[in-house]
Image (cartoon, rainbow, N blue to C red; front, side, top):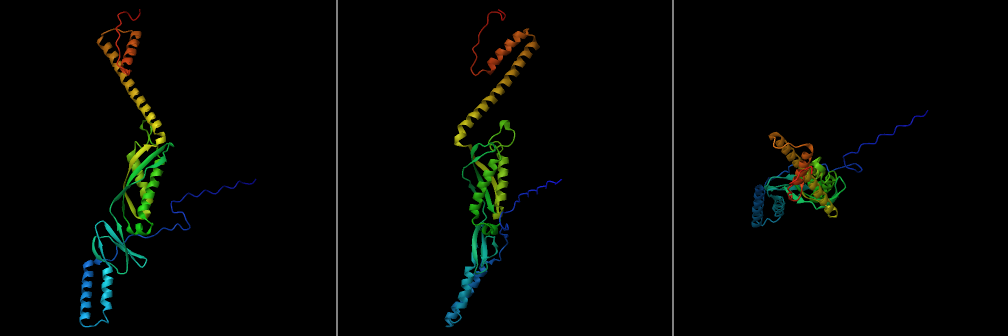
Length: 307
């Protein structure tokens, strides 16, 4: 008897990048070598004095040396305002980031890129997505973010601002697809009723997607949430019907309690002796009065209930 071969187990999907080698830019921020900029100013002043001395003594053969030194020093002076950094690159190699504000003298012959580390925010466009129940909804969010690793934001992605914008909208679509717009009787999470939970999931989702760009997410909040126009009227009628049913249930519950209290008080004080038929009639009249939409019109019965 031949045995049926056991199929090989399907490998679990990996969380890494998909590609030939799955290579990412392996670079992290580190401080760049920077001296106080006033030392550079002193060197330039010394070079200026040397140039003046050479011109005075007609020694022009060595004039190029102080001019070259002064030009190199001047090209290496940078001013870093608060909330900004300078990413320093030397002949294609990342050498560090000047993160402290002030006047600095860095390595000459370098390319410097200014990267802001201030807290920024933007609002995504209003996206039309389907919620967990398949209903089309419009949703938008405000994302508050900040650059945490200037090296990754500069070299790991092409444009980190556009990268954060696109990934935030992608995460917003994914989170909106996993929750219904609303739930009956408030059981479970929903986009409308669980805004704090949804905002936390959205912040974690966006942070995971943009970490490769050296960006940290401070906060994400939903700024717009509504049904799409094609189903807005139908959903509004459903919400109104649910509200009417809930209100009617509350009214009936209160009316039954009031009728029960009235019968108990009448029996307790022995005001009138009611048989079952009279009790049923009284309950019916009280429920009509308490549950009706319009004010009741009293009718005086001068005869007997049995005639």
